[in-house]
Length: 74
Length: 419
Image 1 (cartoon, rainbow over the protein chains, first blue to last red):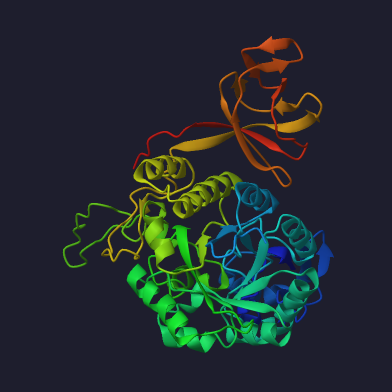
Image 2: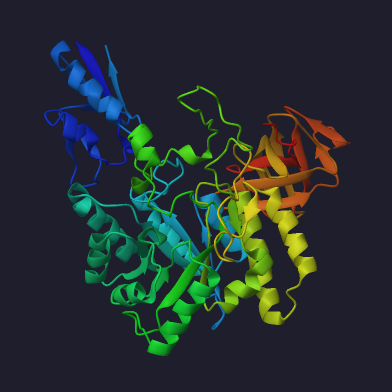
């Protein structure tokens, strides 16, 4: 298992994570920032547990993030 | 409105409430600012949020200052409803206008009856494009890469051809007069996107141009000798030494860059340009005053100055240091404690370094703005002292009220930059 953390307030809504991992990420129509699907809000950090098989795709999303607000913690 | 009829409008950047107050106190006619991610300083930590708009609008209305929200990034489909939310916030709060670049933002704002200004990101360089955007916008910010004679031609044609904006007034022309310039034509640089996947056009520029570079001949492996390693870092724009020509070009709004800079920068630049504008209209603008303004402008954040493209210079005015060349810097020494209103004495807690009688200080805060003075007499709990140290509560005479949210800085000479 691994954890994906999204520091959402610093997201600039570039859409890269959605392009790379659409099963995990969507753009919010409300505020134009990315949403980590199914994640839990822990004081502004949105946190989601993922199985090992989903680590790679989320790491690619994290690498593409221009403002580095996505972490994948193993 | 604070702006006197027929006089040029001075527009200041506001990256936060401290800079906003500094701009108002220094005499800005208008301020511009961004919220959340939809502006060219999306990386900045101090952007306002949508919820701040009513307060900003109220403060500025009370002071007769116009408010402009920058909404000038490129916009994707997934942004559309969020942008509409921001525009609704603008409308509800009574913000004067939005500064837009994307046609979607322009169209949505117009359909909601919001005044539109066209951002420099659109790179408007000719009268026909001005005529086109005048269908939607009352003010147009020209490309920063035009010469003043080109600017003058455009303003002349607007009068001659009577080109009106939606408000029914002649369309106004705005130019940047001070602050950072891009090495590329504004908004047409993709360096940051290529190197870091980080689009400057979404406000996330990593400023590749401000770094040092070496040039290597791949065949021989030899490094080529270049005089300045900061080969892409343009110096900052400064027009105060030819501000008469700027005003004579017929522009009606002058804008200072710097939403990412501190309140002391906003205070100093606005004060200098405001004085220069007043002197221009009073017939007292002269080179002695220019020398004084230049001295003061060099004290705050700058990468060295040049006149941009306005006087038709060739490219090659590159900065030769990393970051600022400011001749002074601010040293944080403590925070506000109390203001004794009747005797006009401010008390601070010293948390770092020390404060001595005769020191030049800066106080900044979200309500206070930026206040600068030289302290003559200082007191601690032990009575009058020459120097107050870390841990001391220090008090001194100050005409401006301070608050617990304020920060106290000492202004000290900056060391000569080393390469």
